[in-house]
Length: 81
Length: 255
Image (cartoon, rainbow over all chains, first blue to last red; front, top):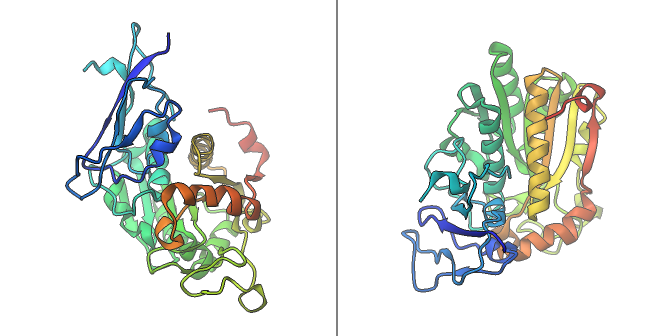
C-alpha cells in the first residue's frame, strides 16, 4: 500500500507558478481557482486523494511554500532534499 | 498534526519574508538550497553572505544570516576582505551573470586566481533580469533579449562566455562545477554541489564556485514551466553540466 501524505501550501509564499503541478508524480496538485492569496495569486492545492508525501513538489518549489507531511506508523526521518 | 510526520518544511536558514522574485523564478530554489545547506552544516550563526546587484540584491532580506551588500560586480572583492578579517566565518557571494560575468568579471577572476577561501554561487540565466532582460555575456547566440531584438548576432556581439570552464583553468580554484535547476533530480545534484562547495571552504581548500543554470520566465516571455524546458533544451547543450575542477584533496571529502 502506498504511503499516504498531505501537503500544506502557504498563502503567504505561494505565487501560483504551477511548477509543482507538472512535477507531481501523482498529478494531484492544481491551482485553486476559487481562492486568492493576499498577493492576488491562485495558490496550489491538492484536489484529490493520492498524495504520497514524496516531497518532490517541495523540492521544485521556488518559494519554499509547501510543507509536506506523511502518515507513518514509525517516526519518519526528515528527507534531505 | 504530529511533528514526527513532517517530511519537509521551510528551512531555518530563511527568514519569514516572502521573496520579491517573479513566480517560478529559480532564484528561489537556489536560495532555498543555500539555506538548507547552511542549516545542515550548522553554520547559520557564523555565516556572512555578500549580496550582489541584480535581482538577488535583496538576498539579505531572505537569509537568516549576516549579510553585506556589495557594489555592482564587487562581491568577490568584498568577500575577500570579510574572509581575511574574519577567517573563522563562512563567507559566500551570491551573484547573477550580469553581476559576475559582465561588470564583475575582473573581480571574480582575480579572487579565483588568488585562491581566496570563499564560496561563490553563480546564477546563470542568460540575461540581465532586474533591469529588463538585456543581453548578458551569457546570452545564447540567436537568443532575443530587449537589447538584441533580432537575436544575439555573434558577428557583432560576440560569443557567450562559459564562466566555469574559464575559472577552472586557474590554479587557485579548488572546486568548480556547473549544475542546473530545471528538474527535481538536478536540483538535488545542485544541492550536493553547494554542500560540497561550503565544505571546501570550511576545510580551507581554496576557492569554490557553483554555477547554476537558472530561468527568467518574465524576461524570456515564457511560462515558468516552459522556461524550465528552455533550460533543458537550449541552455544545457550550450552550457554542459559537469565538474570542471575538483582538486585531489576535495575528492577525499565524504559528506
